[in-house]
Every structure is written in C-alpha cells, then in structure tokens.
Image (cartoon, rainbow, N blue to C red; front, side):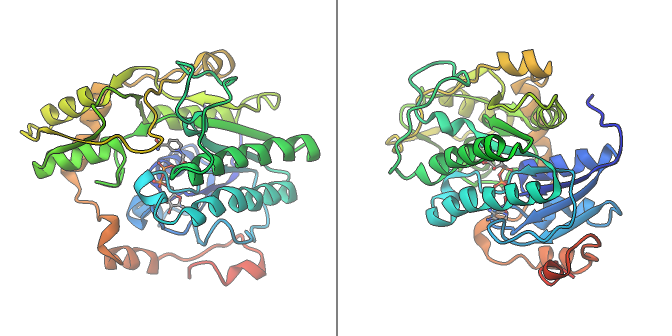
Length: 352
Ligand code: NAD
C-alpha cells in the first residue's frame, strides 16, 4: 500500500466522477485534505455523498475551464473530462475546451502553488493502434477530424501542454495514460462497454455490439487504477511519464458480453450493429514501464472485478444521466458547508 508522509492539500478535478470519487475516497483514507472540483456534467453528487460531511473534504462546483481561485494546494490530479464516448460526443467543443483550456487552468494553478500535477491521459491517444500491445513510445494512429477527435486530440494537446510547462517552467508533472477502467459507480448505460452490457443484461434487452465483437479491450479494476495513480503522483520527480496504466488481460467484446450476461443470469443475446467510426480494433497496454518505475501491476482479475461491480449495481439504483435534474443530488449539495481555503474572488463560485 502506498503511503505519503504528511497530510497534503490535494485538488482532484473531476472528483465527483467514477474514477475521481474513488480517488478522493482513497486520499481521505490516507489522511489527506481533498478539494473536489466538478461541474457534474457526467459525475454525480451521489458519488461523493459519503464524503460531503468529512472534515477534510471540500467541494468546488465549477467548470475546470474557468479560473481556479484556490490559494494553496500541494498536488493536483486533473481528471475533469467526461470519459464516455456517448456523452463527450454530445458537445465536442466543450470536450475539447475541457481538455485544453482546463489543462491550462490546472497547470497555471500548479505553477502559482508550486504544486505537482498529474494528468489523467488516455489510451485513446494511441487512436486505432497499428502496434500491439501499445508501449508509451508508440505515437499513435489518430484521426484528427473524426467524432472521437475532441477527446483523443484534446488529451494529446493536454499532454503537449504538460510537457511544455515542464520544459519551459520546470513544473513537476506526471502524465498517466489510463486504459479502460471499470468498477462500482460507473454510470449505468453511459455507453461505456461494461456499464452498457450490465444495463442490457439487467434490462434483458439485446447486448448491443458494434462490429462483429472480435475487437479487443483490456479492463482494469478501479482499485488497481487508483493505486497506480497514487504511486505515480508520489514517485521520484524524474519520473514524468507518459506512463501506461491498465490491465493487459485482453478480451474480445463478444466474450465480455457473454461473461456479463452469465454473471447477471441474463438471457440477453448479442445484437450486432455496424462498427462505429474510429472505434479501435484492439487495445492492450504494455505496462512494463509502470512495473519498472513504480513496481505497479494490477492485482484484481476481470472475473473478480466484474462480480464486485455487479454486486454494487444490485445494491444501488444510481440515477441515469438522461433523466434531467436529480432532486436527490441537489439536496445532498445543499447541506455542504463550502470551502474554507479559498481566495476571496473565487469564494462566490463555491457552493454554500
Ligand atoms: P467520468 O465521466 O465518470 O468523470 C469525469 C468527471 O469530470 C465527472 O465528474 C464530470 O462531471 C467532470 N467534468 C467533466 N467536464 C468537466 C468540466 N469542464 N469541468 C469540471 N468538471 C468536469 O469519467 P472517469 O471514468 O471517472 O474518468 C476520469 C478521467 O480519467 C477522465 O479524464 C478520463 O478521460 C480519464 N480516463 C478514464 C478512463 C476510464 O476507463 N474510466 C480511461 C481513460 C482515461
């Protein structure tokens, strides 16, 4: 288990999302002070409901592209960006702004605070890869004008900004390329493959497969990913990345659909549709660098992780994104006391 020596004040952008909420939880468990910045575009107050009353947890409800008025932070994890293709393609310009302008806000804050900053990049920077598995040195095969470009090129540009702030200003940076990650609190039916298959299995509807289902993916359980993020953030200053984090256990999409149907005891059968534009045919991380530099490798098998995810889905009926404002979520936020560590100019944007 990774430990950090003294309490730090840590900003997690996108902290109310799937990965961010698990990260906030883990940081609090390790005794850190956490500020979660989120605009709830794909995240939910429900994800952080258990943290809102924690004395070391603060919430800043704002867009990451707007100036961030924090006075002091020691570390920043920049996770703000909707990860589901279905959701991020709805407003591609906003997705691009989040990735590029958001990265600049976060980097400027890090410069002001002399903080270390980690960028949650993605395996999507490799596009539809021509090299398999993908090592960090592979420069990718990305369509700059396709429907996924707002995300892929946005993340590539954010990596460029991180590298340039490091070269030009000596900022301490960490770039992590995250491969598909799953686990409890994924938004049901948000278009990501595992959450969609679970939603279809539960509803007993056909499991929608784009293409013939032979395309492969590699899935990392969320606790392994959070562990990797912490190790990277707290690694030696000379380790900057980019560094792949993911589980190299590879599975084709059709087998995954069958596995999830079996787990959920569902009779849902695969329903095939044409392959989506720029959908990668194969995806598997080369994680030798993560092992070499961080001693990190995933510990949770796909079977175990899927059963954990399914168990949580059975316990909770999480709100869907498309159902409009969620009154339960508003009530959760109303009780939150606001931020004690803010610059005057930004205090008005903090949720009271
Ligand atoms: P998510 O969509 O659940 O979480 C993203 C969070 O960012 C949400 O809470 C959302 O409300 C917030 N957000 C989005 N745009 C924002 C903006 N402009 N200002 C403020 N907040 C904003 O996604 P996730 O799976 O938790 O992913 C977290 C990060 O990890 C993302 O940057 C994503 O690109 C990256 N990543 C995730 C995966 C994965 O498989 N989960 C894979 C590769 C990369």
